[in-house]
Amino acid sequence: MKRGAHPILYADPVTLSIQSSFLPHVDPEASLHFYRDLLGFELRLDVGYEGMRWLTFGSPE
Image (cartoon, rainbow, N blue to C red; front, top):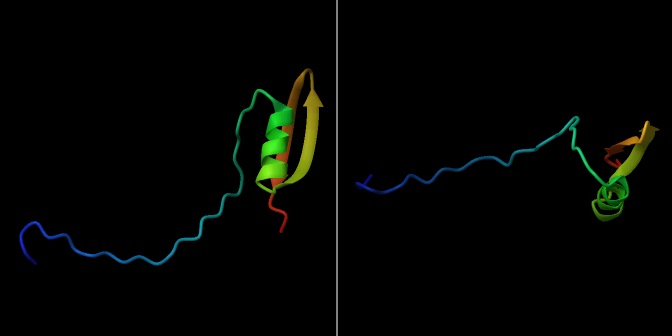
């Protein structure tokens, strides 16, 4: 290989799978609209407690 030349690297495609994630939000209605209506996730659980709200989304498949 010539000096300064970079080797060509090949990689197989990677499948990414996220099991769970915690994403804080300040506007639950905006989050609901974004994750459900724009990204297409299913709303699995919507829990309110003492002025707080937890939304759980999942893949529709």
